[in-house]
Image (tube, rainbow, N blue to C red):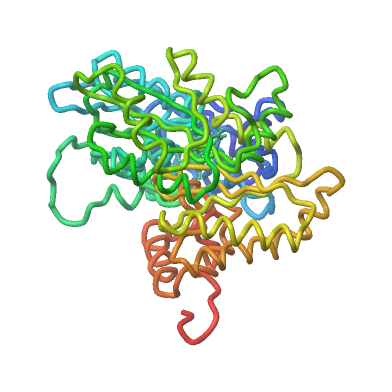
Length: 484
Ligand code: FAD
Ligand code: 2HG
Ligand code: ZN
């Protein structure tokens, strides 16, 4: 078959299949990642509206050796949703945004079938409309898509109660690199018919298949939700508060989020019109949320906090009396990411640890970094209730982006080595994308890396699905005789 060679000719073929943006101005918002750090020129942005169009597009790209970068809301934090900037391949962004229909909602089986481009917030609202709960919740929920949530196995704020995205998926519809459609949209609660194939695609960041639709689990709605912000003398005290609350059956926790004093300071600086509801400067704050599915006493939450108060060393607290007050408390947790971006050069470390190790880890790491790099602000926060910290850093005034970049390898090594010693993970919920490929090769065993390479090359032998993400062009480089 004669191959069209020019970009224009290739784009004509794409346009014959689906809507496609090819002007630089239209492409821009899709080519740059949310953090503004990774940019990759795309051949165009294809916007298919049906699974059949996705399948034809994948077939066409395969025949013409065009790489495909799946994209949902482009809120990912590891550069996975934009083309690599190396200019090696022609890379077409395949945006799922037009595949945004809710196909079916079934309260009887507590399930919902949605297309990949539906926003997370729209899924939550659809569930709410059917008097059910879809519990995944995260700061970007107004712009991230369910396909992106599945492809990254998103975590968020309610993992301690409902699990990660992986725990919320019943079935998937996926277009494979061959162009075939896998119709796996089953809503069954039990299905042991061979390998659980959907798990392969959950967390695969667009490298194994294009997720076009999903069957999701629904849960009983929460009839009462209580929210409080507490000030604590240390991270150790936050841990004892978590344990105290978790052993009380009368307070079903939905979130337990750690916010360090430096995080509060940064948000205050970047959003000067907001006032923090507690005395600032305490070593740790915790945002606690509990949700009841059945009847409960209106003051159950406050009473419980009062009972654990003394034993856990709580210094001060504010309990929300309305939804608006709860949202005002959440603002101080959910705005940290935006505040870091506004404040300038910063580094992210999305780590997970055995929960009991968190206080010691924070104490030791803070001390190490402070003595080694006095020009850092340690902006530590995160989902302490499931062991996931965003142990992030901002440059202090006077520290340039170049300096921070020069420090980055040593800082990452210090943090990730310490995490590995404690059997933690250097990537808790954001994935690998482009930014953590070296870390994956360093911190995972040759056996694991080999399995990943085998899976990748079996499903995508030409390496056209999201090249340069998770698994490189060649098998991982590993040291020693275990290398393959
Ligand atoms: P994108 O960014 O578009 O894509 C992410 C990856 O998935 C890419 O590799 C892409 O190729 C792939 N992909 C996207 N759609 C598909 C598809 N249909 N099929 C196959 N592959 C696909 N993450 C958390 O886990 N927890 C949080 O608490 C959290 N909070 C956040 C707060 C803010 C303010 C921001 C900006 C981000 C946050 N994130 C969080 C990160 C991000 O929102 C999640 O990773 C989210 O799941 C990405 O969804 P998306 O639709 O934007 O995906
Ligand atoms: C969150 O929990 C997100 O708010 C983003 O996962 C974390 O900015 C970050 O590093
Ligand atoms: Zn997070």
